[in-house]
Length: 460
Image 1 (cartoon, helix red, strand yellow):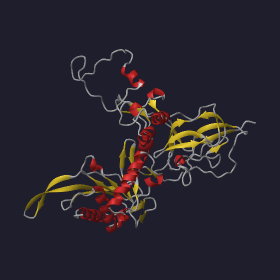
Image 2: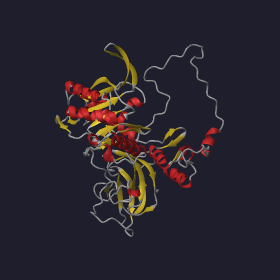
Image 3: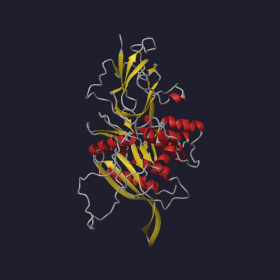
Image 4: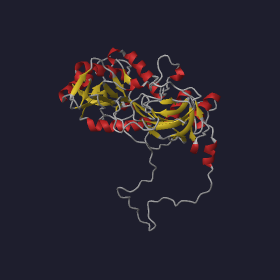
């Protein structure tokens, strides 16, 4: 008797509602053994290799590279081969990231079992409406939802590749512009990057080489000439602009990975928080010598949290309760090509300037090569957005529940300041403090901001 098994996408240990297919390691009709790599999946935080839960023939694969699969929905269907090794019924393997004693190469693996709700003989998905536990995500905690959409690789600088492939290329020091693409429609795949890294044909920093696909694009077949665009009609009169609601000419792009999760989290925060923003300027005129601005910001936030603990807190809007934290874990917003990450600077109240700088370097490096543990992207008690390193003076940063407050640091400027007996030019930093007005009063927020400004004004 033939036994079929349907493998449902397990929770990849991140509490997110879906994952994107990066690359299948098998095709329909292939035979795969227990725990061999089945597929590579990208979540908002990592690229994870999912192993096969059984040994047997692959009957059906759900979707292709770029497709989004909802947690609990069918990922693959197998015909069990009893002559090959199988996992014992009831064997506890769970679904989790390899850690602890695993070898370094196993750090991103997920162990899948044929029990525990991820495989069903009949192929049913998890019951609709069944709750999944919330957990920290790239920019906060987020509820799960059900949806499957097709997504495509994004073209940046003329190179088509998925964010996970770009992250791997950065990690291996590979220049994507010099990689020979073998994927459909000229898309660079994981194997392409690994191959280029192994043979050294596309080292970052080397002179760019035109790829075959690029040369083909450079010399396209003759096509019917399109009429030149003009601001005038055929009658020589100015063309009227399109009315609201007219279709745009650009191509829609499905959000995925980090940006997809960021959109969910921001919408959720907007619906749940009552934000209020206070703005002022930190006067840095008294600073002595060269100082680490980010380290000073972190120190000032810690001082303000100690002075007014109400903003170093979590707020539960449903139960109308708050949790004041004795420690200070600061979420540091990191802007990347793939979207926004907010890693946690743990125990900031215990770190000196050098410790802060070292920790931030480590977190940024882990974010850039997508090796940061999921646990480091949640659980912070207050946030910092140093947007001024790019542009902007004041802002209304988004408070992501359960946090109560976020500090925004604007672009440094030299301002004319009135002093006793005349005027002076002082170096100042605009500070924006957004807080959830349900959780703390305006007075508490103002005192918090004053304590922060006072610490920033100290000579060193």
